[in-house]
Amino acid sequence: MNVRPVLSHAIRKLTHDVEVMDERGRISTISIPAEQPLTIYVDKRELVTLMTLGGAPEALTLGYLRNQRFIRNIEDILSVQVDWDVDAAAVVTRNGIDNIEERTSKRTVTTGGGEGTVFGGLMDEVDSISLPSDARLKQSTLYKVIDTIRTHRSVYKQAGSVHGCALFSAAGELIHFVEDVGRHNAVDTIAGKMWFDGVGGEDKIFYTTGRLTSEMVMKGAQMGIPFLLSRSGATQMGHMVAERLNMSLIARCSGKHFLLLSGVDRIIFDDAAALETAP
Image 1 (cartoon, one colour):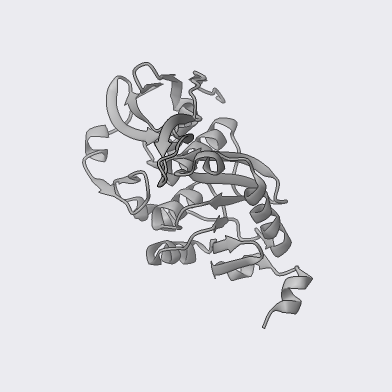
Image 2 (tube, helix red, strand yellow):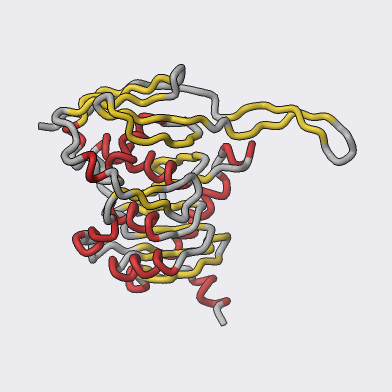
């Protein structure tokens, strides 16, 4: 059975105009991110409220359910309907969620912006995940990814105060770009898009503007992605998890600069100019 859930296509404005006064008393209008609560209900049971930009709320809902391991198979979800009039996403499942009381009793607040949460022992699954051993990333492709992000039109450039995540092909072609008020929402939204479309991550590259924490690494691993890039840094736990998974964790990506923290054997250094200028 390969049945996809029925989705609404809720649309809302991603920015909000406000009047501001600067240090000289001058009045102007600027755009700020239009943050909004989205409460997820599963079979009429309230599960969680996420603060979101709301660009792709159905995909965010799907990705959250997948990454928190509430639902394993996309076919078990009948529909996701978002109604911004009541700030809610109503999920209808085929057979419910097993042991939902027990599974939501342990809530861990993570270091991520936007109140990332983990239900149960997410780290217990590290050793059950196997990333493709033959996946390789060329240095030139890495630079292509960084340059694409630099030139991509975004809410951040217009209004600031948001995080972005992007999914790229092995050749460095942009597949999805998502922004939200928290990077966990952004990565969950991409996970939801991949899940709905039946797209695997074994030949993909993932980019985030946020820190590479343990939960971000685990979410990338759950999507089967062997390469995780960031313009920011990494935490000790994120590094430890990436090493256990042999995931290429690449931090401080800017221009021609990057720091490769793990998965060194996956990277092909093919940029002659970079090699010639290396100390």
